[in-house]
Amino acid sequence: MANRILVAGGAGYIGSHVQKQLLEEGFEVLVFDDLSSGDEVNILDGAEFIRGNILDKDVLDMAMSQDIDGVVHLAAKKAVGESMVYPEMYAENNISGSINILNAMVNNGVKHIVFSSSAAVYGMPQYVPIDEKHPINTINYYGYTKRAIEENMEWYARLGKLDFAALRYFNAVGYAKDKSIRGKERNPQNLMPIIMEAATGKREKFSIFGNDYDTKDGTCVRDYVHVSDLAKAHTLALKKLMAEGQSFTLNLGTGLGTSVKEIVDATEKVIERKLNYDYAERRAGDPATLTANAKKAYEVLGWKPEYTDVEEIIRTVWNLEL
Ligand code: UDP
Image (tube, rainbow, N blue to C red; front, side, top):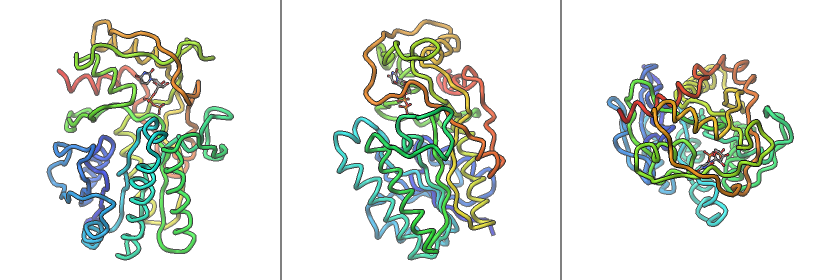
């Protein structure tokens, strides 16, 4: 019988790509999502769907009791700025909601969880590329919620309740090449969807935050990893947990650094016209450079990103508009 996976936050941007990868690999998929930021169009044919919020323990328990073999948990709020203004909202949604998931798993004998963590746990880099041994020095509340959940999973694992894979994403970008996922994020806060809104006329212009960083062109450098590559890492991680039952924590990035200006230039090339943007003040809390050392993901999972060319990645987004 196929393994049955509950994907919390499965209707979201990364969750929908995880859903697709699971279905393609023959898993049964039960999406659990409250559609607060996810989109119903992202529930793919072949997936089951329960509309529920992870703060609702009864619905969560009902979902978890349906012969679930493993969980992928991506249900979270993720706007860094917002988390610094409304930490209580992030505490409840991200931390309490995740504890509810862990407890529903324990109550129903579900052993394996792949958790959507973030490079935000590291805070300001002391060196780049960042490996998993880099000190944890979280500087925003969003990142803290991710670390708090990792720590809880570490305790639950130590106490024999479950095993986990914590996947620390760098900058997720792109869309499935076959255009099967079309849901766009509402009120995006991240660079790529903001640029795309400018490219499609939904937004008049955008700003590049800072051009006086100590980088190749003065704009911030990030590690942009394609969402389909990220999704693949989730199924690899799940299979590993199911086979071996040993917990692990990994960075997911390409190891390549791309500046904001390079992303903008590459987008202009792909869309074949100029974008309307200006340079604005630095955004608080932005490190100049943040790139991943993802050797461990290769060693543990055999994971290697297929997409390494930003233009190709941007094309997977732009194609949705054509
Ligand atoms: N950025 C920008 N303009 C925007 C949004 C983001 O210049 O409208 C920059 C941001 O300062 C950072 C990079 O783009 O250097 C990636 O930001 P994003 O919020 O996408 O991800 P983060 O690296 O903060 O996780």
